[in-house]
Length: 136
Image 1: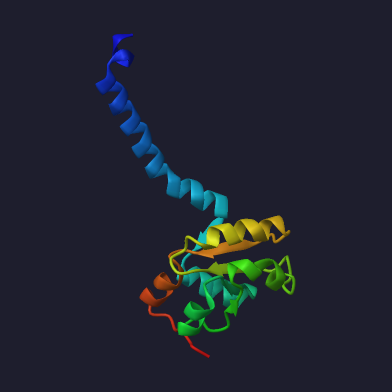
Image 2 (image 1 turned 135 degrees about the vertical axis):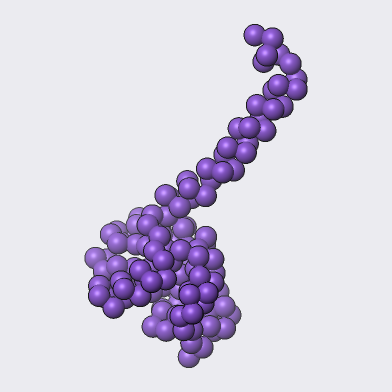
């Protein structure tokens, strides 16, 4: 019992718990958002399953370069834009690095969308894979 009464030991326990939570946090966030797909998997889903790409970035980022055929659905307008989509069709959410899309995925699931995925690594991973962007 002397172990827990020593202030240095309590500090070390706190650091260990904090670092463990910091390591687990990305996995917790990713599981909350659902499945993530690589750029290659996204292309296959688009070609074979008719997946819809929703870009949730700002209008400036979208006009700066987006995936061809992606629809712009910024986070504040997501519910309104999602109303025009079929809920049983696969949806792939795209953001800058794959983090902002987690909240969008949660919203879409709450709206009844059954097949929601997040582009792992976002638009950065897409360009790193050498895949095209358009400004049209």
